[in-house]
Image (cartoon, rainbow, N blue to C red; front, side, top):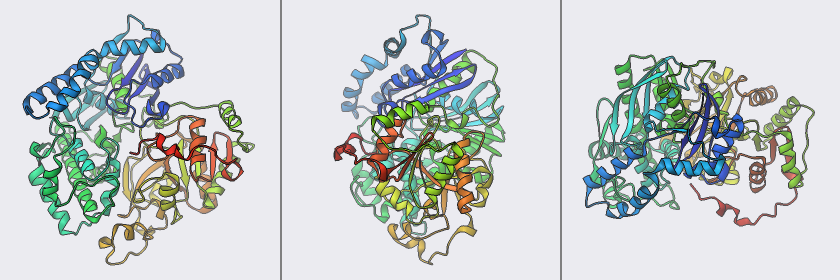
Length: 619
């Protein structure tokens, strides 16, 4: 049985195809269109999934869409009615789109599919609820036969968070939090107020939080404001948001700016404004509140299910700092977080929900770790594909005699301080670069964090970078007693690797703390001595694993800086063409693509117009 899953029309559109329960392929539309968070119908992602699986639409038993549009429309109408007369402008803007397109979503999908592969009249359409799609993507992809399930995001139809239990091929939702009360929207409101873009800048807020001064009276004041005036947090983690301060339910902005400015004592930050300590302190406060809510929700899931396992999905599940605290809390023995926890992962979950719940198929556990296959589910390219691209650009390259020689050469280059674009195998599904569409460098280099931000990624200098480490040696560097293959857990850097800090370290300015040497792996040690760790396994990524082994043989260190192969505002690269362009546009030193190595010094001068950065909308 073959099922196609689709998520679309909000953000991070994607497609996935499963066959007899196995995930065959999955990809986000943004990787093909080069529009970050592309919400359009995922035409290109569907074409890829069909092509990779060797299927046509006539071979598909069902198409599963990741939410119920009519239930979402009901929520919109009830919300506008409940908040009237507020929201008239938003109502007038949104209703024509809903009436013309989204109410008749089945027709829209049919029309789009006809453009791809012709329409198969007997094709069945299924519409699992949004949070069921999230829950399915986590539980059915996990290695657990039974598990508590926690999903947290902005909003689906009505639900903004859910607690469920999965057993075998079934999922039961036990408890839900409903709109307008939402942890995800609360976090996004602070993302907006602190000058970052909603639905893409939340991870920046998470990265900014450690620059807050936990001992500052201002932090205590902000915490009190959040928990006493903005959000009433219950013992089970459910929250009640004071809607007089929020505008997202019916307006075109997240919050009422003037009311927030009066609450916190400073103006909403604009994107170009310099970050000040009060911005950092507020980021710290909302991050701590979010962590507290997640722990409370997880404790409630434990109480309701009695399970030793927990599966998580939804956009808030990408908050790897909160995940790290949850892991260390000991509430659950085992934790699985869907690597594509956002809306893109809903495509996988919708297909899985259709297969296991609608069609009552027996659950397969043919995998040894989880069903996501390391999340390497996207397109891959042959030597012929790569050489065609390099010939098109008349790009000089070398091709070592085998991959082991290539890995040795790459490890040598990185050990010498070079920055390497690394494109191998199948593209990752989800927001993280996991070693196949990555930019790699030496974590020992104290200048690397600054150089990567300013000269390679062209992004804010405060943002941290993650380490990829041999799984078998992760505990040599980090206090981490669990697998972290998807870069979704933050763990402390071991005390033995830290350097001494001045007594006033936590009261230093943001930039003073940023450039203080904190450990022997400074490029991946954040200002609070934490790191977002990815553990690398030979079973799921033998090429990246071998590279790390070669780097250790040269340096004694079995980890590298790993950041996504893109610049700010650009989706991670998909094709050899994408990779070559990004390589030439930045100050990367080498490109290693498949079995080929390119040196920047040997390339002809890049003649592209300097305005290329305008191609990508900054996030």
